Amino acid sequence: MKLEDFLQLPEVITADESQLLNKDLSTRSLSDIPKSNYREVENYLCNVLINNSVESDIKPTLESLLEEIRASQS
Image (cartoon, rainbow, N blue to C red; front, side):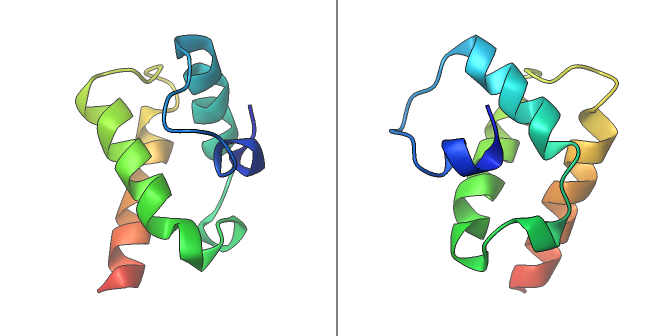
């Protein structure tokens, strides 16, 4: 699953879709995310990171992306 797919989905995604999305997001920068979707991506990242639903090798990248999103909104 890619970021663009996620932004068009209903509220619930499967565990497999989540892992694909995590991998896709780990390759993205802040400029790849539409500003209008920052909050949605921020909420998603918070949920997967809090629930330890992220592979350890990409966790730091997703945490950095989350920090960038938060910094851009302040």
